[in-house]
Image (tube, rainbow, N blue to C red; front, top):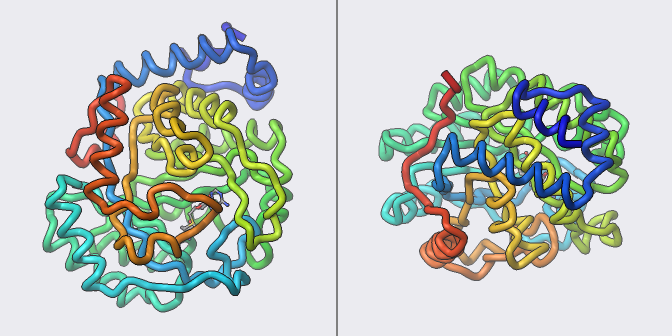
Length: 347
Ligand code: SAM
C-alpha cells in the first residue's frame, strides 16, 4: 500500500479503485505510514498551529427529517429553541473577547430564519467584527439566498454532502432531499465565492468502503476548502438508535487520506470524534486535522442541540471549552492560534 500513499502524496489524486484498495488494507504498517506522511504534510503547510472556530448553535428547529439526526423534525422529544439576534450577537461579543476570529453559525433548516432575518444578523456581525470570518451552516437554500448571505458578509459555508452515493443518500434521508440537489447547492456556493466545506459521517448506517471511496472521489473532484468528517453516533430518538457508532480508527485514517489529497485543507477534529473517545480530538489532530471548534452557544441551550447521544461539552462555558482545548492541544505539542485562518491556495 506504500506505493498508493506515495502516489497520493505526489499527485494528490487516486482512482476510485485505488482509494478502495487503501481503505481495504488498513493494517498497522499502512496506517502508520499514512499518518506519518499526513502529519508531515500538515506541518509543512501549518507548522504546529491549530485554528480555532467559535461554534454558535443558532436553532434546533428543522423542517427536515434526516433519519440519523437528533434534531430531525419527527423527533417530538427534542426541546426546541432558537437564539434571538441579541443572543447571537452576545455570543459573538464573548467570542471576540476570548480571541475567536471565526464565528460559525449552525442550525437546523428553520423556516423562521428567512433571508431577511439572517441577512440582517449577518450585516450586524460584519459591521461589528470586520476582521472576523463568518461561516454559515444552515443546510440547503436557494442560490439567491446564498448570494444574499454572501453579500451581507458571510465568507464560508459548511454543507456536508453526507454520502456521494444516491442510493445510500436515500437510505439516510427521506424525500424530498436528494444528493443531486445537495451537490447543486455545493457548486452554487463555490461559484458565488464562498470558501466551501463538505464532508460526511463515518460509519453511517449502510455505509460500505465502496461508498467511502466514492466520497473521496467526490471530494477530490469538488476540491473544497474545508471538510467536516466525524463518526456517526446514534441518537436514542431516531430510527438508527440501535446502530453502532463509527470508529476512531476509520475516521482518523480518512482524515490522513484527506490531508494528503488536499494539503492545505481546513480539516476539523470534530466534537463527534471527542465524544466516542476521550482523546478523540487529539487523535484527529495527530492524524492530520488542523481545526478545533469549541462551542460558543449559551450553556442554557447546549443540551438541546443534541444531534447524537452523549455529546461532550454541553455543560461548559465558552471560555472553559476553549481553554480546555488549548490545554489538550498543548499537551500533544500543538498550539491553538486565534487568527482567522482562511484557506490559502498552494502557489
Ligand atoms: N442543517 C445543516 C445541515 O444539514 O447541513 C447543519 C446542521 S446538521 C445537524 C450538521 C451535521 O451534523 C450534519 O451535516 C451531519 O453530518 C451531522 N450529524 C447529524 N446527526 C448526526 C449523528 N447522529 N452523528 C454524527 N453526526 C451527525
